Length: 94
Image 1 (cartoon, helix red, strand yellow):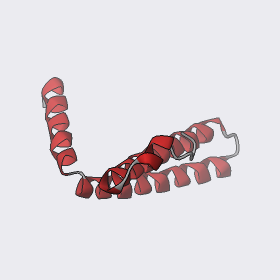
Image 2 (cartoon, one colour; image 1 turned 60 degrees about the vertical axis):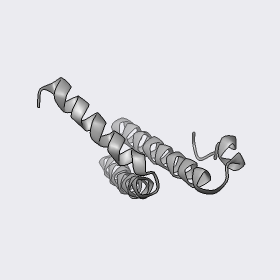
Image 3 (cartoon, helix red, strand yellow; image 1 turned 90 degrees about the horizontal axis):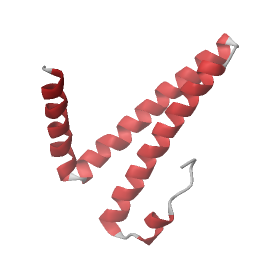
Image 4 (tube, helix red, strand yellow; image 1 turned 30 degrees about the vertical axis):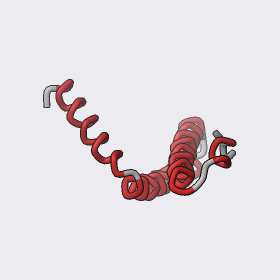
């Protein structure tokens, strides 16, 4: 993704566009988290490693903000997340 807004979003309108924007923003945050954590794993300088990991944590907060808003705007998402959690708990025997 790397910060490029997908062309499909530009064609959407209204609530559908907003949902697509939020999902794209979540993808961007996940990309950023992965990037910073991978760079931290490669960094030799401990200061650089600490800063990269700190920024990755900030990106997780951004992810959470976008996810919270998406949950408010997409009423079926919370229900589906609960189903997924129940399935995982069933598989893991919890």
